[in-house]
Length: 446
Image 1 (cartoon, rainbow, N blue to C red):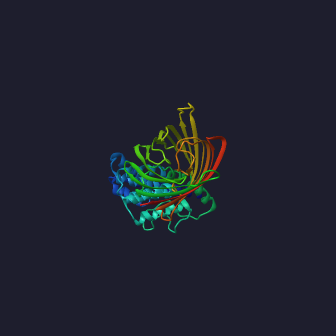
Image 2: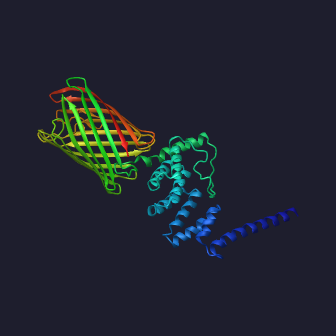
Image 3: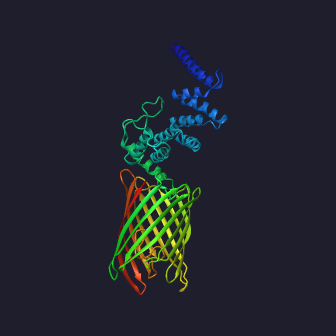
């Protein structure tokens, strides 16, 4: 008898369940005609699966319906399918960059997924279109907090005034979750670090001032150098005019220098340089150029050449480089090959750079090691500043360390470097001298 009653109760429950489900399905397949308003209401009532089905049909029938695409992306996000949501948000934002709500939803999707680096990047892009917006600034702060300190505000990245019901809660922090978040953050931070000279900046202008000194263990007086440059970023690329000054052997020399970084195509950009001086401390003319290809895998390749005209002779070099981003690290190998003219001997040098990025691409520490001879990596240099360009010396080994950090408001940055050089003297083969150099660079963005 008891078993009979149990069977009856089970049958009644199944009828009720399928009856309710049938009503929901009828709303989608028959009965009332589905509308966007219906899908919208379903989504904001927390019925994401039903809303998702309805919105999927809308977007197939009307591919240009950006409102439906945006809401569909939100339903993916609320269901935890962050990759699908990201793809749809990107498609909508590529055509419509003036809808603040879509930016906010896209940023929150990355915060749900704990992709703090991506969320921070989207926040910066959104603030270009909606400057000083309170909610976007709040989301940016939360993304930065998650990326740097793994700390959250009381309300997290949820808008407490929103009626949207999600499947997520703040939850309690624990050591396992925190450790997992650290590893995820390290992997995602690569997105921020792949920064090139043509990466679009929010602030388009930069002034940089550099000062450095090099002291020698014998024969030579200290070399003091300085430079001032101005960078202007345009939609076609960047232009950087620069004035270099060097004091050596009681003489002062000036050099006028300009760098261009034009955009070519997606993943491709170029470097072009020209310098002029009538001082014996610098070459009369120098011209250089490279073509860069930045692949999404993290590899970057370049190839180009240099031409330097000294008072006594001209020098031509072939340059090649390969770089690779791995997590928070960047590795670069660059070679300079100088075909011989008088002695028919080809001279070569190599340069290895290892850099670790900290909270973003403007904060890092690095080590640079070079060996050999080339017209651009020569004696009398401090960090990346060329102090005196002559053909006096031949073989050399160089080791330098660098550290760059930004101010609290990220408008200014400071870079320090210290290096040591061991170099053979051409007039006394087998005899070497040593030098130590140190420099400081200050940059201001506006």
